[in-house]
Length: 147
Image (cartoon, rainbow, N blue to C red; front, side):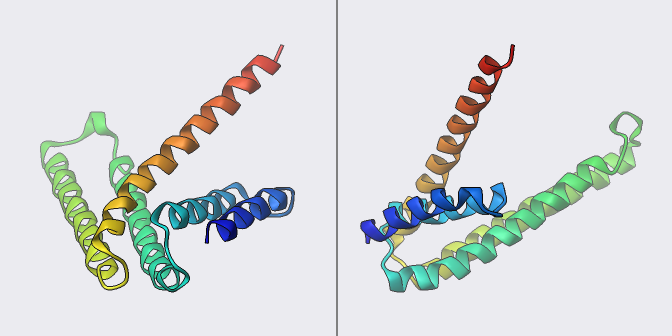
């Protein structure tokens, strides 16, 4: 299984010159990383990824909606009534976020072990940290290269 993941990662890096955009590359790396970290079998991965991808789509839609709520008004000129309405919308979005996360856990319990579900959060956090470190490293190198 690890050989398959290593081959997948190497293939992804070799395809980097082709027409894949950065987002697709990052998602492919994330998929390989999480699959490896959770040590998913082929059968588990086949069931896991549709559930996880649905969760990610819903989470991203909520982020977009929350961003729109925060940016729809000029904060300095908010009335108290409008601010209260925005807070209610923010609370509603937080509740929706909790609901989709709880649904993710419930759905994943049907296809992978509880331990792997717990490890998922750690794997996501580690992947984000590694991506941030890579971004900082590249950004720092670009600054050094500029005269």
